[in-house]
Length: 224
Image (cartoon, rainbow, N blue to C red; front, side, top):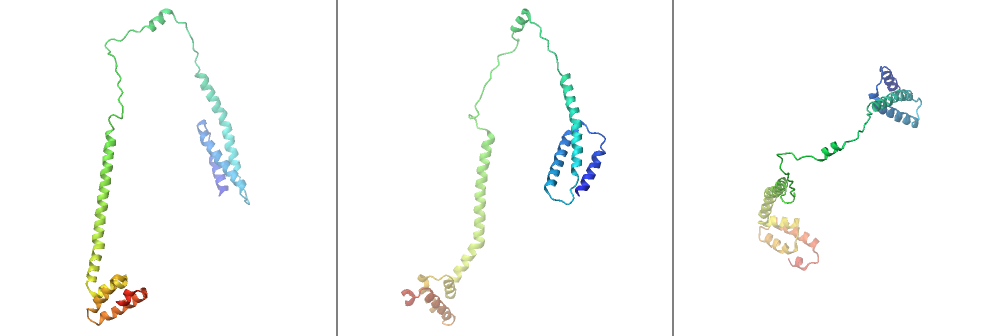
């Protein structure tokens, strides 16, 4: 690939009829890129090293040929722009006429007034601060509205379901077994004993096993 790049680029550059001084920046960049490629190829071990340095030599010779032309053109331009200054002695009349300048008629005295910027704050900064405060308040209001909607949609129905479950002895016992509490153990067990003795009996036995495993040495658990 590098051989193809070398031959292809060399043919294109050699077919160029002539280079001008305006092409020197591009020639500098091309020479720098080719120099980096040659340095990298010398650091890498290859069976066949591409002859990229030939293209580098061509660009270096082109640069050396154009630089003297650019230098000579610059020197010629500098020489043509040199002007000869001739100093003539000033007469006393001319100096006197230049020193005394009569005032122009019809012009009043000019007054300059400087006002401090701290006296009246910029209106733009006041408007920006007001819009920032309004945006902050609007953000808080939106956050409260979203939180209220989520609570009404998610939390409130669950709370109502828990209240309905706690109204029945079987549901209250199930909730107690999910989160056992010693202070409610006797009351939940008494609720089951007051209901039909078929299903609550099994639930009560489950509550007793849970309470016995969790508080085996509690006197309140044993007396219940």
